[in-house]
Length: 97
Image (cartoon, rainbow, N blue to C red):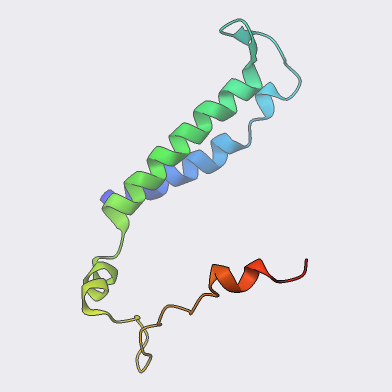
């Protein structure tokens, strides 16, 4: 049931992204200075961020989180990646530009 509800919400956001109803209207101005289309997209962006948060919280695969503590990469036979050695800042000071 939870998965179906999340899919419906994502589908609704997909449909609401196609905002053909504000294409040709700059009025009314929200708060007296924001065109209605811009305000719609700002609200849409906030709603999308909330839905992504819900997806991560409720639909993120738990087995990915269990592997992080073990140091596994998720692929069989691979070693964890070592951090890449960075160049020292002092070696860049005398380099020609």
